[in-house]
Length: 208
Image (tube, rainbow, N blue to C red; front, side):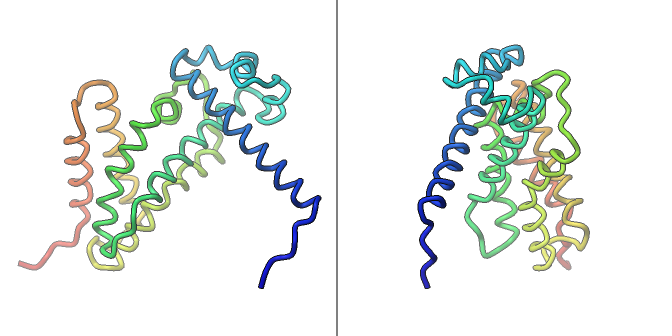
């Protein structure tokens, strides 16, 4: 059964929405690149508009103010991380799937330095994400909770709240990545060690 034709108005609305999304994405890209290369002082509506080739009115309409822009960047960063994790191929064995999410998370952090600095290093002084933004940000990592729940159901991991394990794993990963970004670690071997050790803390002990 085929869907009904959109009609001229429906096609126009879809095109308008696509243009809006494309412009929003371009503005966020411009802003995060400015943040990474020129620092938080460069995040003025005038500078972003000049770099993106639009008016400041467009930016104010889309984000409200500088705080709204910062929150949009914060949420976009977590959305990008979500896509990295969701792109990890499914495994038949949930424990193997969980283990594979670790390298993907590290890759997301290192490949998006501008977003990472905003999300975890307070790159914009004075910016505090709203409670709603924090809730949405954590929800972007819900794939960890789901895969851990599958590990519990399959008997690999001790029965407990999946979020408890996910947060411990997240904390271990963030610690290693922060040290690596600061130049204290040369590669990802420590990251792999601490994330693997965290998972092992929750594994069901096999009978001797």
